[in-house]
Every structure is written in structure tokens, then in C-alpha cells.
Amino acid sequence: MKIAFVYDAVYPWVKGGAEMRIHELGKRLSARGHEVHIFGVKWWEGEDTFEYEGMTLHGVCKARNLYVNGRRSISEAIIFAMKLFPALRKENFDLIDVSVFPYFSCFTVKAVSIFEKVPSVFTWHEVWDDYWYEYLGRAGIFGLLVEKAVSKLSRNNIAVSKWTKDRLEGLGVPEERITVISNGIDLKNISGIEPNWGKNPMSLECKAYDLIFAGRLIREKNVDLLIKAVAFLKADFPYLRCCIVGDGPEKLALVELAKKTGVYENIEFAGFQEYGTLIGKIKASKMLVLPSSREGFGMVVIEAFACGIPVVTVRAKYNAAQGLVENGVDGFVVELDEREIAKAVIKVIGNTSRSKKASEAALRKADNYDWEEIITNVQLMFEACIK
Image (tube, rainbow, N blue to C red; front, side, top):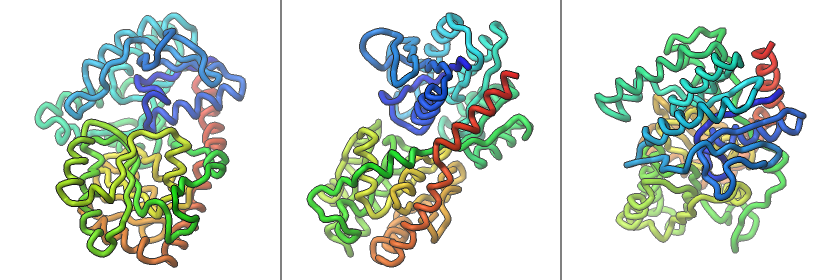
């Protein structure tokens, strides 16, 4: 098969769950003998098109800010969608897979699909529905209308979780048009990465970090609640260490909050990290905290599980990550409140026996998300769409 993946953000220049999924699927399909192309914004220097890890990357327009005032840039998404049309039509593909958000490229892919008579698959990492009103206020009606319009475009939809599938059905997409194929992890690769212990010995009690967060520093991730939780915990754990991996528009405000609450010395703002370094830091932590109120899947949760690290996440209407955590077994699902997060953290970092059991449960669950099994399901679906 000759396959095109479409998403404006491209790994490793932009690091996130959707970018990682495309990268991992693409390189594995290529290894199986398929020709894989990725169309995105040109985040790199040099030629617009080049070979990367067995795939062909196409930069269809110049790099622009993905976020403006803390929100996804509408102009960036529109420009990418416009430039995408001629770029896609230069090649003849057997199938085009487009990541739905930020929507406008879906209309381009549908148009190319009709003109070139090539099947398309729409991959839904999340469904916003009425969350648009929280995101944009009254103007959210426009986002909601665009999302509903996109949901009518394709007969072939992938939802990355049952959570997303249920919400997609809520938009009126028939169940038979949706296939659930989750995100995955490279268990072999993760198992071979050494923990980043720093100066600490290799023992649970003396790990480099008590807590770790990894993700974009945007409002919906609620990293401010983690910092406030650290402030509560510091009273009983004065030498508590927290690592915040990632970058984004909220970083300066979060640094100021850490200083204001007196925990700046307890927190390492590590910025974006290469994947191996990130995994090393997770392995050197006692617990991962993901207080996000909006997650289409929660890739970092299963990455933490593969490292044997339990997870605290939150109950929130748009947080699919809570569906990955079995409360009280491999982590905790708590209310969106800094005190509740702190209480859950204490249950693990303050109890070695419970921490060990949660770690074992996390490792067992990670076995369900190996990329090698997932890629087989993706390939079978793509082949069915082409027939």
C-alpha cells in the first residue's frame, strides 16, 4: 500500500500523542513493505521533502505558531489545509489517513479523496462536542458546527479509545463506521531504557523524583493544580521532588506560581525531552500525575505503566485518560482538586507496599498496548478500506 498520513504537527519536531502515533504507525508500516508519506507543516530546515526513518516527510507550508494566546491557531490550521490540497494531489495514494483535529485539513482530504477516487480514514484522537463552549465561550458554536460537519465526511473512522468512540456516536456517527484502535507503546524499547537516577541509588525510597508530569503546558492540563498539590505535600514531605516535563504557553505562569507557593526549589521544569530521556525520568519517579481535564487518550499514562509507575489522574467530562486507570489498583482517579491529588499521592509515596503492588499492576496493564499488535489491526483496516 502507498499510504499518506496527514497532520500539521510532525514528530519529533512537535511532541504529543497524535504525533507519536503517526510516527510509530508509519515506521512500522514502512518496515512491513508499505510506502508511507507524512504531510505536515515544515518544522525542519532544508528540503521540503526528505526521507526519515523509512518514511517520506512533506512540509507543505512554512512553520507557524501552533498556539496563539494559549489556544490552537485557527489561521495556522486554515493555511495548512489550503496548502495541503496541491501537495496531496502530486502523489497517487492507495489510502489517506487524516488526524481530525484541527478539522480544516479533513475537508481538504475529503476533496482529494473524491477527485482522486482514493479512500480516506479519519482518525479521531478526541471529540470536543459541547467542550467548545468552555474553550471559546459563545463563539464555541462555530467549533461545534465544524466538528459535526467533519463527522459526516467519512465512512471510515478510527477512534483511539472507546471513550472517544462513544462521544463520536454522540455526534451521530453510526457505530458500524467506527473502529477502535488505541494508541500504543514500544514495550521492547521502553524496557531497554535505563532510569535517569541522577545521584540517587536505585531504590524506590530514593528515586530521583517523587512525582512527574509530562505534556504540553497548556491550560487544559491543569499543571497549576499539581504545583498546588506539591505545596500541600511539602508540609509532610519537605524534600519532595517533582519534575515537570514539557513546554507551552503556560510555562511562565507556572514558574511564577511555584515561586509564589514556595515550592520552586522542589520542582524541576525540565522542558521538552527526547523520548529516551523522558522515559528515563518516568522510570526514576514514584508516580506520574496527569491532572488534565481534556485528553483524547492519554499516551503518557500507558508509557508510565510500561515503566511500572502508577498514575494519578482526574475525573473530568473530557478526560479519556481516566478510562485507562483502574482506581486503587494501578493508580487513582480523583476529583479535579489539588487536595484530592495530594491525598492520592500520599497513598503511594507514603506506602512502599502499596506502591509495589500498584507498580506490578501497571506493568501487567501495559502488555495490552504493544504497537506490534496495534499495527496489525491498523493494516487490516486499511486493507479493508481499499478493497
